[in-house]
Length: 280
Image 1 (tube, rainbow, N blue to C red):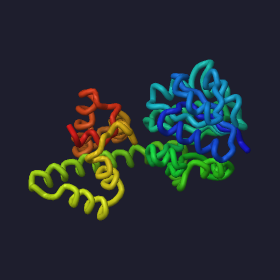
Image 2 (cartoon, rainbow, N blue to C red; image 1 turned 45 degrees about the vertical axis):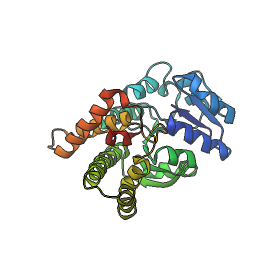
Image 3 (cartoon, helix red, strand yellow; image 1 turned 90 degrees about the horizontal axis):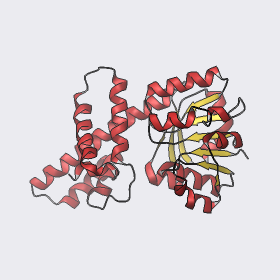
C-alpha cells in the first residue's frame, strides 16, 4: 500500500487520517501545533519533524492547512514539502486556497518535475470523519487514476474538473453559492418568526423541500454551534478568494454576504460554526 502524509490536522485532515488508518494505510503527520497530533498518534499516525520529513517518508502527500499563508509556509523553504519531494511522489493541495497561489505552486512543481494536483474537499466534519468526503479534482486525468484507490479510501465521490487549478476554482464557486444560500436561509427564518409561524415546521419543510445547504442550516439553526462543521472564518476567507477570482466583476449578492461574514469574524465569532452568521 502507498504511504500517506497529511500536512495539517484540523477538522478535515484529522478525519482523513483516521479513515486512512482504518483502511490499513501507513500515515505520516505534521501539524504546526504538535499538541493537536496527540489523539491521531494514539490511533496509529506517525509524527514527523517537518513537512519535508513527511514528504520524504510518504508516496502521497496531502496538504490541508487553513489559507494561502499557511499553505506557502509548508510548501516552500528548506523544510517544506517541495524540498522533500521527488518525481515519484504525488503532491496534493486539499486546502481551500486562492487560484493565484495554486497556479504559482503548480508552476514550481512543473519546474521541478513533480506530480501535482489540486483536490479540495467538501463535506465538512461529518464527511471527513465518516470517510465520505466529496473530492474536487484538478490535474492530469490519467495520472489521477493511478491513485484513485487512495482517494476513494476517504471519499464517496470524486469530481474531475480539468487541469491543475480547476479544482480550486470550483471550490471557490461552490462555497460562494453555499455561503449565499446559508445567509438567505437565515433571512427566511427571521421573516418566518416575524410572521409568527411555527419555526420547526418551516425549517423542516424548507430542509425537506430544498435540501443541501438549507438542510445543513436547519440542522444547526437552533442548536449550539460549538460543534464546528465549517468555521465562519473559513467561509469568510473562501468568499474573499472568490471575490478576488471575480476580478472586478460586479457581484452584489456575494459582496453583501461577504460583508455579513466579515462582521461575524470582527465580532470575535469566526471560530464558531458558519451557521452563527444567522444568529447575530
